[in-house]
Image (spheres, each protein chain N blue to C red):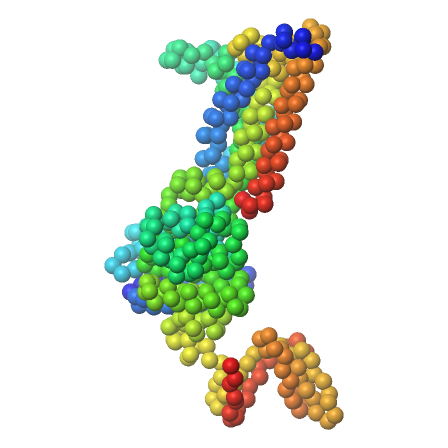
Length: 229
Length: 283
């Protein structure tokens, strides 16, 4: 066992966590305003936006991956624009993976935040407005600190979901070692070449990490309920 | 001087109604707003706070809060609002709840002293009792030295003893800061103790407006006493009938004739009154 571990390539794990970390950060910044809008709006377009946000949950990753590939490839207007303006290629590299992951994991960030914001006592937000505070101040100082469980769930689940991503990554990124070959793709390749030992070790590591992460979320959320947040 | 002239269509439980209020309130007044539930009291308060929109004009002193051209946001109205369910910020300590409104440590200390909360200033809201929470909420509402203090049934969730304590504190604060105040309340004794003017809303319109004694006193003509209660039972005792009526927290017995008994139904709300006798009050 130790021998296998010492020969193990950790790069795919590192890549998975780097991808998940960056995706989570970007999605958090984008999703807080979106989730806030969804939680407060009475607009008729709300269900449309909600449906669009939730699409990645039901779509097969291959469909999502295919569209992203088509939209960002160097033949598409977007791909051409980024290539010519910034010299950045958007597919089959790490940047492409980040963009694809942001689409793929969007609902996992938006939905917990939205239901968190919706659960906040409206009078509390009104008390903040009456105290002269703007919406942004209210979100940062009152809303977010009082939905800590939802916040943690959103961040952890988005992170974990991105680590566990497979189909979209394969479609958009392929399997370039050190660039797009994340842990889930590595396991797939081990199985393909019938290296079950390595596949076992990789899978066990993923399983243990995922379990520990989820366990700590539930323990934390249980504690927060006791202090009334 | 606060001038209110607003109207708004409401979809209440009893169908559509129009909230139409034309009211002038003097600087420093303590106005109690009362009336049946669904009469538009809370909505009026929320319109004043800028939390709900309505048509018409609102003017506070020389400042226009609302007219055809302007609409001042809640943030800019400088009001205090005490919600029935406290609405404290659970993530902040008592002191932080106050300082969030205005970073005025001096005023914060003073308010906490008056309301006997100084020892609790580092506690989080979830560790406080209902009465303590509402005192914090009251202090928080005073932190921006509001031009207008609005309170929506602030004491209705508290037990009678705590209510009296808080009434005293509200009174102390009102005497010191002389803040023009509008309080929604159903409790006649509270209204009597605190307010110098009572406005009764019924179906969105003002039906009574005056001092507490005139508006709330239920006796009329030669009646000396008159209480409302629920008829619980009528028992036959020898040749007479005795009605058991629940008034407030007490049960009383009243002798009724057979003829009177015919008109009464168990469970009915009745009025018990008496004329010309001299009662004794003992403390």
